[in-house]
Amino acid sequence: MKPATFLLTSCTAAAAAAVAVPPPSSSSSSSSNTRIPTSYESAVLARRILALTPLGTLATIFPSNSPSTAEDRPSSVAGMPHSLMDYISDCEPVSTGNPTLLALSIETTFKNTAAGSNLSIAVQWTPPHPPPRSLLSSLATYFTSASPPLRYSPAALPRFSLLGYVEPIPNGDDRTPGAPGAALAKCFTSSHPDARYWLPGNRIHESHFVRLVVEQVYWIGGFGDRAFIGWIPVDEWRSVTEEEWQAVRLPGEEEGALLGDL
Ligand SMILES: *[C@@H]1O[C@H](CO)[C@@H](O)[C@H](O)[C@H]1NC(C)=O
Image 1 (cartoon, rainbow, N blue to C red):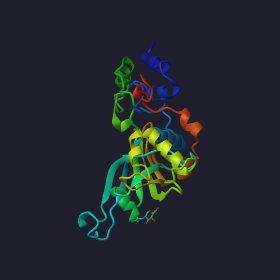
Image 2 (cartoon, rainbow, N blue to C red):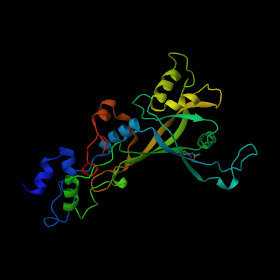
Image 3 (tube, rainbow, N blue to C red):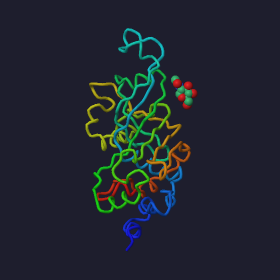
Image 4 (cartoon, rainbow, N blue to C red):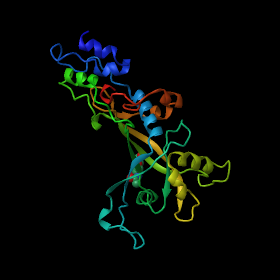
């Protein structure tokens, strides 16, 4: 069996598309058999990443006015971008695609949004299973020496940013049984059990459930010869169904999957 045939018959169709590149002698193109996903297919992957990923990086802009004495920030950060890790969740109806956040009033991020800043959330796919070194991936690397190596590379993994503005979720802080806040608290603490200590109404910190109203989506699916890179139309982002994102799999999501083959 020729090695190329071995590669083709050993993988799923999708994986084969990524590794079924000709040996260096037969063609200079390393991506002739690779179909780059559409923006919609990328939106489905992005919605799965949002559903499965508990953390994101929230970016805001400091107000341009000078801080009052009550506001504890250097005046020189006026207008500067500010990014911090925070908890994210996918707790609102799937037809919105708006991440749910638990905004603590003492957080700089939410001080900035209260002062009028927009918000961007960066989300990256982190595979739960470290990629195995295998004969298959070694062969694939050997036969594709002209393209990026098909072994573990964070640059090959999908990530995206959601851009928009923060708004409160109506009755999101009402945690009486049956109220919107009760469902949000249950959903949010299912991925963030520790957050039960700072849910709305706790005695330590003022907090509120808010949403990022997504207005723009920027996606980097991985290397550009096999992944879509660019702006995903927001109507595509919003129209992804749960059935669709449940049906796809991400690189390294399943144990034994070869990252480089995806
Ligand atoms: C927020 O973004 C919108 C565009 O969606 C823009 O018109 C507005 O000026 C921005 N707000 C601030 C405070 O930068």
